[in-house]
Amino acid sequence: EMYQQEIMAEFVTWAGLVFSAFNPRKHCPDPFVLPRLKTVYGGVDIGMTSPPALVLVGQDERGAMWAFKEFYQRNCRPHVWLSVVGEWTREYKVKRWYVDSAFPAEIAAMRQYAQVRPSMKAKDAAGTAVNYINSMFEREQFFIGPDCPFLRSEMETYQYKEIMQGDEMTFLDKVKPNQNDHALDALRYCTLPLSSAAAGERYGQWVAGKFG
Picture 1 (cartoon, one colour):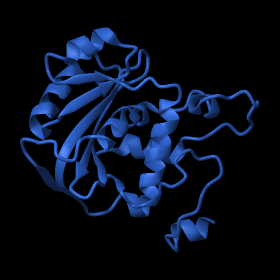
Picture 2: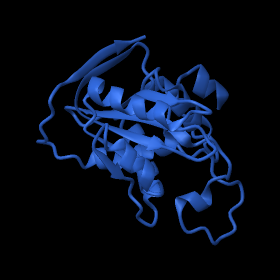
Picture 3: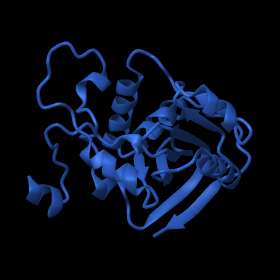
């Protein structure tokens, strides 16, 4: 399996990985050329004791998604990441930000910088988002840029429990506890809303660039 994965560049499903369809060779192109994006959304995982994480995801004209920008900083005070929200909203024309709805005060504070929505809180919204992202990987419609190292690291290591008790009801019941998933949470919050963004939505400015 290691030979197939690393030498032959073939995809191998590693047991227990949540993002089993993720293959860095396919989904982290080098050089990374960001296409014109018709819509950009952001996700924010605030956390309490964990580092806040911000992730930007854009959708191109053919419907593919590109995670291209990340902020991830330990011991970060709110005014620091809030200023990043404002800066990125202007620079990358972020249409909306999605934030964990358990943080109404932070959502209110963000509204002075950008359009903000609470994250989806359906019974298994996390599972729905993970399944959608995996399906996009399988179709080679989801890509991660070099400016998202923590997102890539979390995606490569995030695992399900080795033994299930049988009473797990949602995706979050099935994964191992205490894993790093801050960037992944931010990604989940904005990916599903972006997937349902209206195709004809007008967007002020295209975002384009070349990295690495």
